Length: 398
Image 1 (cartoon, rainbow, N blue to C red):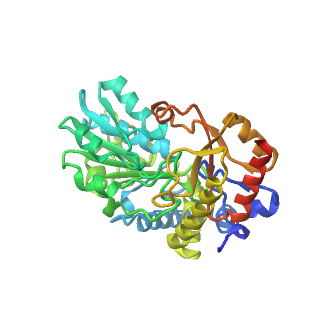
Image 2 (spheres, rainbow, N blue to C red):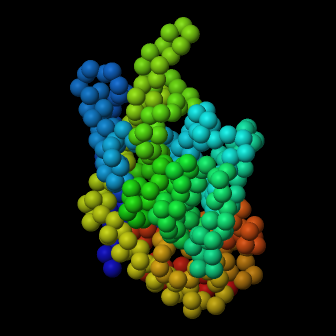
Image 3 (cartoon, one colour):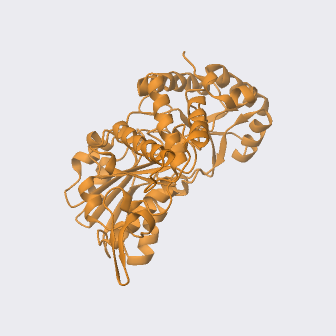
């Protein structure tokens, strides 16, 4: 199995590290690190209105990053790509903008799934407090997919927003959102949390049929501090952003102002140009290794191998799916007689990085009576030998 560990300097600098926490954040390939260093060393400048060479170069790199992101998502234009700070900020920006533009009003319903990250729940709870919207949770089936019968039952005339994750950050399950896109009415906005899908698989906004989509760069090889909000151009154009200043403003009078066009009106203040450059280099890195086909092939092999080992480990319970299909390489497990935090600490003492507790998905844990768990999340720099080491260490814990 091809492995790309040598592309990531952190592993040569920490040769004993086994990093199984890529759902929290990914490690950075040398191509990204070098790209950031080159930008900061040779072209660092603020963008917009600078007439000197390095400002123009920085502006060009910022636009190139958006063009590449639009290409990755199969979007129509870079003008549909809004850069924010992270996924959480992106959805808060969108939800509050929907409120400002009366796209959501009192008694309207937002549909989310029971597996959502808090980042796709709390912004809607805030609107529930502010304007009195309702929130309904769609369940999952025994096969760990969205329960479409439950969806259709809850998808009544009050539903104005559907906001679903494409991949669970806890279980790694891939949800069939293209089916949601085909079922949704024209009076409903369909929002996709792609934070855990863009790192692992090809994401096509047209195939999904969504209206908005958001993800974060640091989970897909880029630096921290760069979030992405994509939206259909006609929807973004007709709305006014919930807040505005700086480059987002075209004209200011004593008693009025006029916003810029797309995408600038959604990006007030100084943008994270370094983060944008890192995202450009991250996607260029994915291109260089054979695009998402390579990532999916490596992860499919890792999933099968991990589950084979887990099925032979009688003290381990893989929560939810033990099937290798329709999932990425994220595993939610418990061990008999051991608290998840104790397991994570024991693994850390053996240079294995995992994450424990409830993974920002408390409604899911409460719905399925799971008190807590360990999450191991793998990526293209992991190996079957590292999986072997994990289970050998867990054997000594029993």
